[in-house]
Image 1 (cartoon, rainbow over the protein chains, first blue to last red):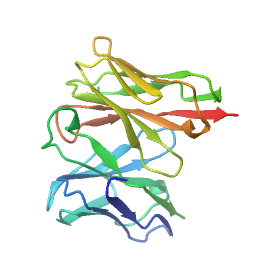
Image 2 (cartoon, chains in turn yellow, brown; image 1 turned 30 degrees about the vertical axis):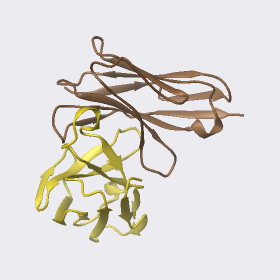
Image 3 (cartoon, rainbow over the protein chains, first blue to last red; image 1 turned 90 degrees about the vertical axis):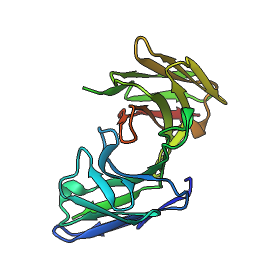
Length: 117
Length: 112
């Protein structure tokens, strides 16, 4: 998985509780992304980061926040988990300093399965 | 609107047979197109990547084609194996680092 780890891999929590998912990379890539994957939908972008402390919203950012204090770590926080946030969450990284076909290639982590009861 | 559509949604084939998966897109500007394989419970893994100037790319038994004029791509799998059972996702990249457009995938099941 291209030097990307996610923790935890599985989590069950209750509605209203805060949850933090961690993505850690060893590739020193500049860009990091959080996606959610649900049946019937393609991967949908939640938030992304283009450098330390530089983040921005994706298409489904409501109810989520992120932080990136180090190049290697990108945290996703569900401030008050809801049942609609039950999903599989994937972290991805990319490095656009590459030229040609390597540009914008994304590498994905193994995913975190989150269940909100 | 930038969209990626894949067909069929699911497919069942016999081991040893060939199959072709389709991807149509409306993304503009276009940078490249990738096919990913996603095994159950795992993250997507890149199979092939093509820019607008490439019309075919192979990776073992996987061959991807791209027609940039009609904005269509296909992934052909030859001599399928049980391990090919997975979801295959088409992803089109735009011109910037945050422009990735995902299809919903084709679920392929290879049966003995």
